[in-house]
Length: 587
Image (tube, rainbow, N blue to C red):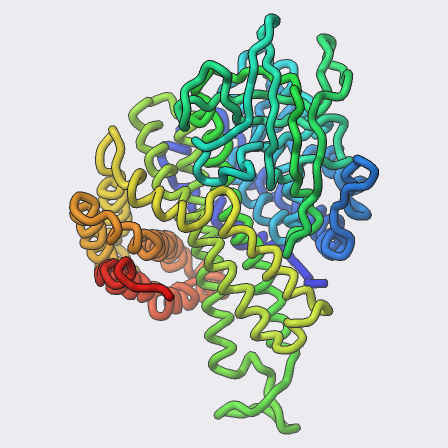
C-alpha cells in the first residue's frame, strides 16, 4: 500500500501568500476564514485522510462494490469510515450554514478534495456526487425542495447522483430516451435506463437523491427538450421521513479497470416518481451547474493521484540501489537511483507539474468564489468567464498529466511498480477513468475551442492574456527573466488563438484536430503563470524561509526549462492542419 503525507506546507503557503485576489478578499462572508482556521481544518483533514481513509484504497480494490440479492454492498470498512466521516462534518465543509453546512470557501475545500483523491478516490466519489447534486439543487430548486432535501444531504444521511448517460447517448444528450409523463398532482413518472452512474446505489446512506435528465411527453426533440427531475430512491414523506421504495432499481454494477470500490451502476427507472426541478426544457443548463463543478473536481482528482504517486516514487528512489552514476558515491558497487540523472528528471517533472497545478487550482478556487458571491455583477461575470475558460483545462490537462506521472511512477519502481505489492499500478488504474468521465478530454478540448474562447461578454482569452501580462510585469529583477520567457509563450498562445479563429471560419476539421494541442498550450502557459506568482513571493520573502523558497525557485526553473517548451511543440504540431488526417485511407 502506498504511503501518504498531506502536503500541508505547500497548501498553507498558497493560502497565506497567494490569497491575493482583490475581489475574493472583498467577500465579507469569508473575512473570518484566516490562516489559523485554515491550518486547523487542514491538519485535521490530513489526519482523517492519512489514518482512516488511506487503507480503504486497497480494501476497495481487492473487494469491489457488488450487487448482492438486490442490494449494492460497499467494500469492507467503508460503512464505518463513512459514519465517522459524516459525524466529523467533512461532507458539509463547503455547504451553506442555512442547511447545516460549515460555509468554508473553495480555497479550503479544494485542498481537502485533493487529499481525498490521494488517499481513496473510490471512497471520495460517494460524497463528491452528493455535493454536486447539492449544488445543483441549491441553485435551481424551489425553497420548499431545498428545505426538504438539502439538510439531510449536507448531513450525509442522504447521498446524491447525476444521471445523464444512457446506452444510446453519452456526450450527445439530445439522443436520450428516458421519458417523463406528467401526473395530475404535478409529479412525473420517469421511465428509462441510465448507465455508468457513479454511486448509483450503495449501503452507506438512508436514501439516494437522483438527479435525472429526461424528456417530457410534450417536449421537443434534441437538447432543447431536456428537463431535470429529482427522483429519490425512497419517497420522502411530508414530515421529511423516508417512506416507500420508489421505482428505481439497480440492474448491475460495472466491473472496472480501477476505482473498484466505487459502485458504478446501471439504474432502471420504472415509472418512478420524479419532481421537476426549475423550468421544463431547461434541464441541461441546470445540470451543467453540477457538471462544471464535477469537471474541476475531476482535475483535482488527477492532481491528488499525482501527488501520492510522486511521494512514493521519491521515497523509493532514495531507498533503491541500482547501477553506478558518473559521479558514483557508492562503496559497494551501486548508487541510489535518485542519483541517476534520468530518475531525477522524472521526479522533478512530477514535482514541478504538481506544485504548479496546485497553485493554478488555488487561483481558480478564488475566481470561483468571486463568480458565485461577489456583489458587483461585472466583477462576478468576469470571474465566471475565467472559470469557464479554465474548467476544461483543469479537467483535461491535470488528468492527462496524471496518466504521465503515474506511468513514470511505475517506471521508477521498475518491476515492483508493475506488481500489486507497492500499490503504484492501482494509482495508474484508478486515474485512468479521469480523462474519460465527466466528458472525455477530447470533448473538453472541443468545448474550449468552439465555445469558451469567446462569449456574449467578449473575447475571454484576450482578457485572460491581458490579465496575465499585467500581473507578470514584475518589478523584481530576479522574476523578470521568467516573465520574459512567459511572454514568449503568451505570444505563441496569442498566435495560436488567431489561427483557431481564422480556421473556425474556413476549415473546422483543422480546429478539431488542433483542439487538444490548443488546450495543452493554454494549460502549460497557465501553470507557468502560477509559477510566476509563486516566484514573486519566493524571491521577496526568501530570507524568511530559505530552504522552502530555494526549493520553489529551483522547481520553477525546471518547469520553465523542461516542461513549458511543450507548449510550442503543441502549437507547431497543430498548425500543420488536418488534411493528411482527414484524407488518410484506413484499410
